[in-house]
Length: 322
Ligand SMILES: [Zn+2]
Image 1 (cartoon, protein in one colour):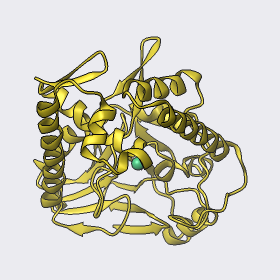
Image 2 (cartoon, rainbow, N blue to C red):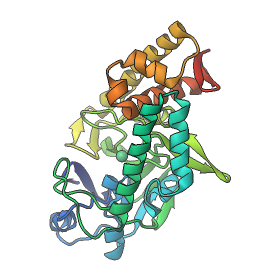
Image 3 (cartoon, rainbow, N blue to C red):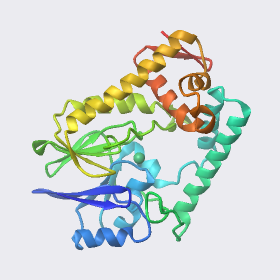
């Protein structure tokens, strides 16, 4: 077992009797590939499993494939590695339609439009440019993310050489974690992090001809619940150092979600049918103006979770307790 820090990310090399697996490809900043090769001393893993299709977890996928190592990814994240984010007009339109449905005022919607546009352009540049942009905040340079088709799309749970790959949808639709049960080890990707709960993203999955919004936090919480029952003792996260007390950390993450849910439910009861924007303004009076996207993503996530439990519902853009 070896954990290798690459800027803000950590990848883990699992060496079991039956397999040599790398958890996450590593992010593609200038020098990342070379640093990673030096760490593994030229001994290629049998397979690299990307916990999900985000740029910092799957960015070096194409490099691994070129070196002859297959990349596996959860089936529903296939589209995330195969093409840059937000390039289809339908995806952009769905994002903006969601923002509009929150009831945000025109000036906030203009910011959202700008933000979606910036992210779209950045995703395209990361996919196509051979240059690394300056960054230096979380990684030494900006990240590239050349698209690739995964060698295997993992559907449901599976096991390879004593290492389990467990479906843990939520953070992304096809998110997976890895586990070595007899050691009590959980390789959590972004499902469980030492200092932070990932923001429930606004994301869409294809359904028939169209796109359906994926209820991120409802799935994320269900995955946490499932993992909390597995008796894990040590966590190897996708960011930061490995830590003990994985079971307690999973329970803690669930408890924080429950607390935030209770606040949202309470507000719904107090104000009656209300928009996401109004709820944001009530719960986070300062955050709503400056950080609408983050605040609204979080509130929407908790509403989705309440809805999945039959405790809230949306009627024509307004949410109410039930
Ligand atoms: Zn992520």
